[in-house]
Length: 72
Image (cartoon, rainbow, N blue to C red; front, side):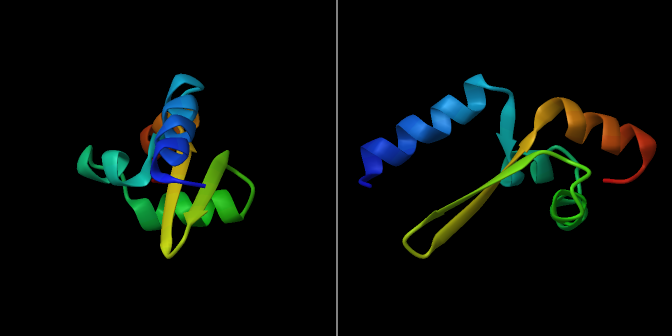
């Protein structure tokens, strides 16, 4: 997979309602808690590993609900 393919895939995730962990972290969400919720199966997430780069994308709607409940 080259850089163009990965950028296209990231854009596809964004169109489907997934936001990157870094964006959510800047917006006040706790990325570590989001990851923990995803690993417990309580939050939809996609883990993208390209080479040595690993990025997490979380469902925007579910992340916002978790944040409102005080879980993230």
